[in-house]
Image 1 (cartoon, rainbow, N blue to C red):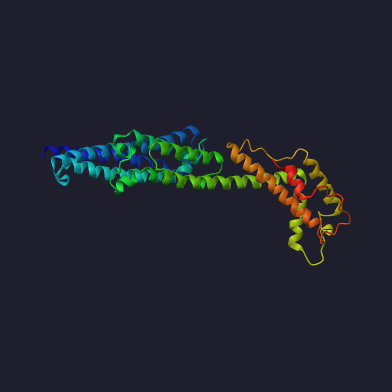
Image 2 (tube, rainbow, N blue to C red):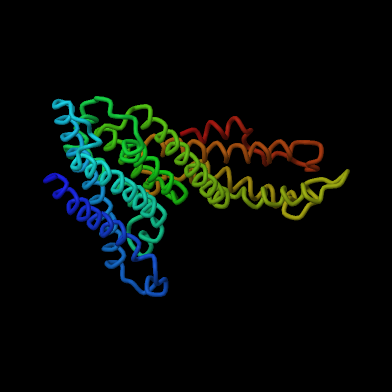
Length: 346
């Protein structure tokens, strides 16, 4: 009876604390007009405050998990039924409520990554990284998750899954991935995976998300290479010929020759090729040092850019020397495609 008298106010107080922490996370979703007027410091403070409350809810879950486990262990030793113990019931029900609130708050934080990042120096990926790191470290330090840290299996229940590292990492990476625009974003998420792995995330889960991030990085590199290739072609003189040949392909009729098409005359092609050959002495292939920090990815990007320039030259060379080229004199073609590839090899 005394335990029942203690449990009821405890249950009420825990519910009040969890509700307060969880409900405050949504207060900033209102008032879009006001949001547009906030300063950078206010935006940063709001995102930090939301994350602080999210971590606090998770911390409450950890303590409840610890006390539930302690009471459970004591009752098992005394061979007393758990269901009849009001303190255990309070811990168990409060943990379920707190875990549900944590899940809702985590998903809300993920859904608002773009809002939190607006007007600040932080990207969505940086905010997701911060959430993963802080909650992972809180989990590793909490006595309520000590069994998981040393590798013992916990009960395969809903609450355990809700509070697990795979759920945290999956929710945050899923929310951040659509907003990845730079390779720094990918590096931030990989850094978060490293911390989560040190805090107990299993290798199979880490590998799954790492592959997704790496694929996203590859797509970003391809986009960068596309942009830089266009710039290189413009600088070295081949962009005009490529554009003219694409236009010709769209209007081509039987018997048409390249030399008769605007932008592809003997004089224009010869002038562009001479400019291109001159650039080979100091190829304008970008270093990507400002956009790609990973030296291996930087090397890949440079090689891809060079190869695409070679591919464009090969396409032009083969078209010019074909029957539909129509050029009276091909002496201006100073290098075949393989020679250009050698000169552009990095």
